[in-house]
Image 1: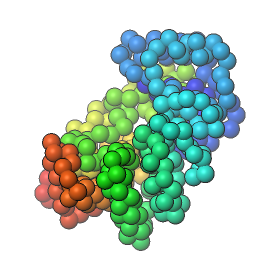
Image 2: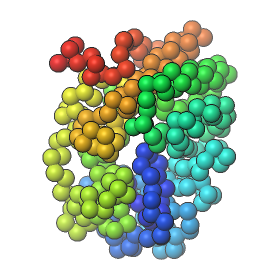
Image 3: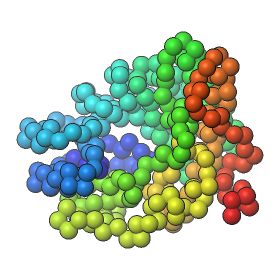
Length: 307
């Protein structure tokens, strides 16, 4: 369960936060949310705003095992730190998140390389995936190739960098998506449940139950991989398969846009090349199979094979 502690809690995914006024979740709603998670055997991720909470909130939060997602400007220890721009330097030994447009990302290959050397893991989130055009493909492919060279050097020098765009696919043997609506749910500051934070910030009416009456997800089977015909026949396993982006771009929660698939497969193919190069340097992930070569960037174009 993701618990947004305030309306101004930062985004760590594709969606934007357009709420500027502070609205802290009620202490009673927080207490009941924690209890709900305990009863349903859910782990909790708390997403903090950029100001210090009242002491009683920390006391309640610390009554249960959890993970903390905090904005970098808060300047406190956390499991995940959301950076505000490229100038923000993450503390060492954390998981860091950078949200960026594709155009901006392409300018910062060296910055990404530097960040990888000082954090446990770096997640880069493209905030404009749906705007990708064909002319962007070669630029993104070249960016991933340069970044792969930097990661290869880090591995050769004894480091183990983790970057969602390139290293995740090398480690996986099956889909590893966000699980929104299936294995993950969000509790917003208004005491209501949402498929993920994006649905809350898009429209508060898109709730799927509340802390009083419980969950009420319509057609919940559609959030499962088995009911996603394109995704279940895809091996870009590092793709987040964003449910919110699916609905935004195709009007179906289980159907991704062409742009999402192209981005995911450019990353998949770059991971394949990186894995091959690292293995030329020595034994690496001997228990993992190689990533097969493919001739498409959108599995829908390969539908004759899996239909």
